[in-house]
Image (tube, rainbow, N blue to C red):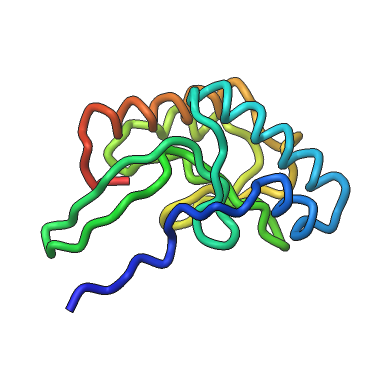
Length: 143
């Protein structure tokens, strides 16, 4: 039996989410700036994916197991402790860019950082665009 994906696009307003979920002014300003930048880099309007992810664009994935769904091309979440960035693909050769990104921690599927000033935004733009290009060319589930 197929399971329903938890992270699907919703109709919740991104700005309403930011205003109700983000309680620190600096994190709110960083979130709004990140929305502006990712909108520019991706060419897509922001949308809520699940309860806390702000995503840009979409792609369809299908695993060898048959599980499939849709996901944002790039995105982020202003989580309570730190931001989560969804802008990297394991199939991409991003290590040189990651080495120049700034102060962050790498998780299994995302990049964690405390504040936008910790990151090199030129490098983040390159990572974001590389991710979009990779997904657009491969249309697969490697990200």
